[in-house]
Image (cartoon, rainbow, N blue to C red; front, side):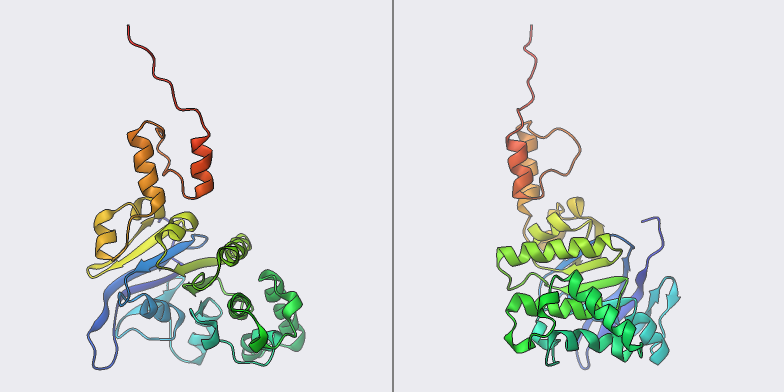
Length: 286
């Protein structure tokens, strides 16, 4: 990456009390405008890494930087961090607590001490962004699982973060719910929000992400999603399988149906489009 990192961990190590190191000497960067998938087996440190990035945990060694400046963990420093980075946890019920959707979404802006007009504007903006404006007055305990997911994300979006970190956002959603959420994340990216997604779904990561980070016992490896998720050695260390799109591209190349340097199909629709394309003809000899 040539541009400076928006958020970065430098030499970060962390261990929970009386436990072994979860992360050791980790360097990790989030770059503006790049959709980043974070993958690894259970216990690899994904949750710890996300909490370090959002200020929920503090490195035992090393430091967290925002736009090159070290984060301080006093009130001013944490406020600056949380208006830059927001984390949405996997289970929305761990994040929702207010009586209604609008009240829950208002919590962060109110804590910033913003005037009422600004708080209302942020609530309306976040509800619209997550396509839940009609649910503003709905009691949170009456929401479906997918609606609770979107409400939790709206609460983070109302802080207008530059980086939105999502822990397994598609887990528990049916296919239609997943597609709706991915469309929403696409709109958030278009509006300038950088999105980091932790997931176990290598096919989703290949389809959605620009870059992928694989957490393995030897550290973190980050690169373009198509090439990183084709690294069978890293995938094996991370306890992950090869994405079907990578396997399909390899098969297409073996049969001469994919000859350009593109990474190949990332969705079923892209594969179907390739299948409908006439195969290249080979000139007859002699």
